[in-house]
Image (cartoon, rainbow, N blue to C red; front, side, top):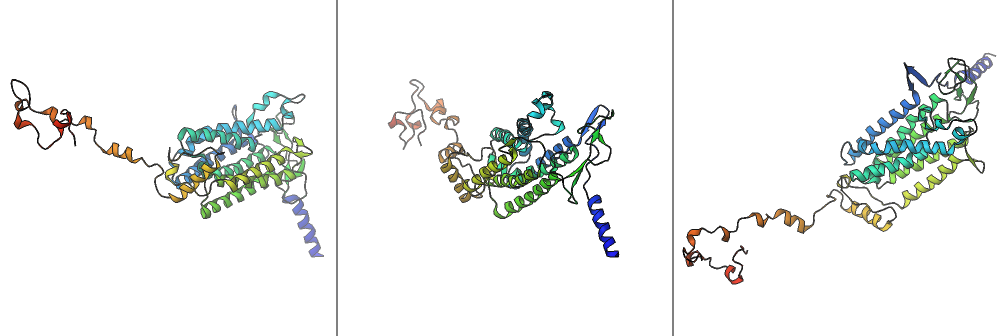
Length: 385
C-alpha cells in the first residue's frame, strides 16, 4: 500500500513539477530603452565566437585580431541574410492580410533563419578575407566550432521569446508556454508579461537543438585536434552536423511554417545543404594549411571550380609544412642583395685632374690603368668587372 502511494505521488509530481517553465517575459524596460533577451543572446553569441575564433586562428598560426577584422564584414551580412531567409519563408506573417510589412524590419522581435545567416555571412567573410588577403577555407575551419557555439547561445533567446517549440507533449521535460499581456490587459506574446498560468506544454525543440549544437562543437574540436584537417573541410563538417540535428528538430515542430508537398521548407533546406556539405568534405583538398599560408598574401588559392589546381595546393601544403609559403625568385633575391651600381661612384669618373695632361686634358700614361679592357672596349666611362 505504501509503495503504491509513493509511486502515485512520484508520478503526479513528475507530470507537474518536472516541466520546464518559460520566462515570464522576454523584454525589460530601462526607462524608454527596451532590453530584449533575444538580442542579448545574439550579441553574447557573436562576442563569444569572435573571441574563441581568434584564439583558434592564432593557434593555427594566423595573426591576432584577424577574426574581428573579418567579422566586421561577416556579422552584418549574416544578420541581413538571416532576416531575409526568415521573411522569405514566413512572408505571410508580414505581408498577409491585415499584417504590417514594416515589421519585417523588426529583427529584435526574433526571426533569424540560420540558412540565410550562414549563406550571406559567408559572403561577408569572403569579402573580408579578400580585403585582408587570407584564405577563406582556413578561416572557416578556425571559426566553425565558435559559430556553432554562438548558435547554441542564440537558442536561449528563443526560450525567452517562447518560439521554435514543438508539438504538445506529456514528457516530464516538456516546456510550459504562457500567454503574455501588456499593461492594458491585451494579449502581447512578444512584449507582455505572463500571468503564470500555462496555456500548453510542448516539446522544447529549442533545447534539443541547443544540446545537439554543443555536442557537435565538442566533436568538431576533437576531430580537429586528432586529424588536423583543413581547406574548409572542418567547416563542411560543422554544416553537415548542424543539418542532421536541424532536420530531426523540424520533424517535432508543428508551428506555422511554409510547406512544400506537405513538408516544412526547413526540412528540404537541411537535406539539400547536408548533401552539399558532405560532397565538399569528400572532394575538397586534403591536408592542412601551413602557418605561413595563413599570413596576408601567404598563398594564392584557386577558384572552387578549379579542382585540379585546388588539389595541387593541398599537396604542396603537405610537402612544404613548416616552410615559408612565399619564396622570392632567385633573380629577385640577387637584385635585392646586390648594391645598386648607379649609386656607386665610378673610379674613372672620379679621376683626379692632376693625372691629366694640362694642355690636352687626356690622361697621362702613368694614370692609364693597366691590365684592363676598358680602353679596348671603347667604354672608358664604365668600370667593367
